[in-house]
Length: 171
Image (cartoon, rainbow, N blue to C red):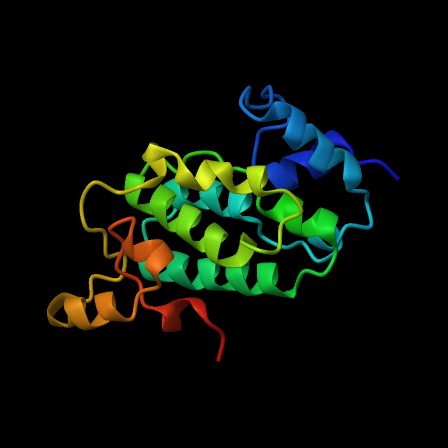
């Protein structure tokens, strides 16, 4: 069964009333057309990167958001269907914070490289607005900052993010 506007909103993080982003809209539409109501994203109520991006402006508790992002990353790792993997990695809306936008791009690269069906799906990760101009440490690691920096995956380090790999992995 095809997706309704509420399902599309859940996957993309967009308001059901808002027009889709102009950039990459053909590719985006092709990906959404491959999904159906049996999608693992919808049946499992998974929080996609796009859904996560809508949570950031509403919640100032950054350590909590890091835990939610870890769950997003773990959900992305467990996806099996090509259509679900592609949809999970669609470009999210901006969070309104350059640091969080950079984190999302880095984590999407971690989970999407060599898994998405078309490398153009992850092109948004390389946009200049997905890099933080200043060091961003969402956990405010204090005196352990540089130790955490050494444990940060390269996809985040190149974006000036300090977030060790352990914070993105399950137990």
